[in-house]
Amino acid sequence: MQISKNSVVQFHYTLSDATGEIESSRQHDPVLYLHGQAGLIDGLVEALEGRQAGDSFSVTLPVDKAYGPRQDDAVQKVQIKHLQGAKKWKPGMIAVIQTEQGPRQVSIVKVGLSQAEVDTNHPLAGKELTFEVEILSVREASEEEIAHGHAHGAGGHQH
Ligand code: ZN
Image (cartoon, rainbow, N blue to C red):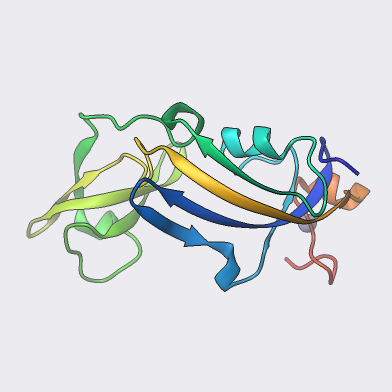
């Protein structure tokens, strides 16, 4: 069957930018997701639509179909105690901060005594990204999965 709304899809991917590989699902489990659920970037969802199990493809997403352009004015000062993910911070590290829109990844620019400067751009913002994708399986979602808005693994409900 072809991937469409309410398909449950299992796939492996390797993500790279102009300078090389960034991450790959091949070091761990494949991605399992419900087509139509939030979380995957738009360009990848569009590229998966209509594909089927066994398909392999590569898609290069322009910046606006990936994580959007980098904002130059996105550097902010935050209290170090509000940075989540590590005890000690150094420039270049990725932290999570809570915002009104939910958790957000930021990059540490500078660390002071009680405050840090963070760049709130997504770490992959401003990059053209290439996904190499291998689709392992496609099936219809169960009513339970549709009600929950996410896919369940082989063992059923796991959360
Ligand atoms: Zn569930």
